[in-house]
Length: 112
Image 1 (cartoon, helix red, strand yellow):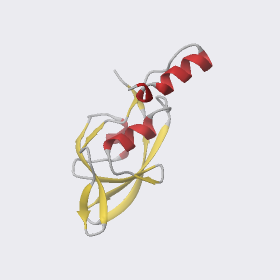
Image 2 (cartoon, rainbow, N blue to C red):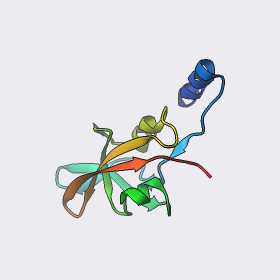
Image 3 (cartoon, rainbow, N blue to C red):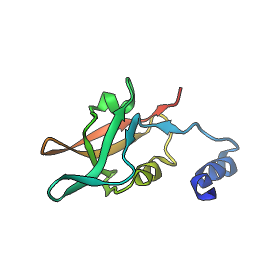
Image 4 (tube, helix red, strand yellow):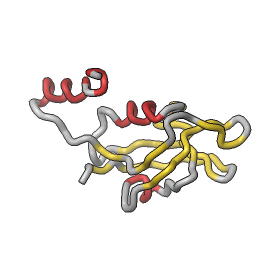
């Protein structure tokens, strides 16, 4: 759909070119599931080696509760936050792991 690429069209209009899409370095479930009673998030299924997510401490089995302070319930929510960002930008994630909730800062990388 055009909405998925609108940010690229706007970049071309504004600057005459597009920047590469940044990568986070994770794969997550499509929809939120319950980490524990009352805590819902996206289960991290895979963390790419040497990615910004791995360097920030994200691990397989973590649940993403929020991105940049906003609750996420679908993988599209995470992608929406990533749109408009560039390699080198940061993304804040609130994670749940083994009963603890904590924040990490991920430095987005350029896809290789």
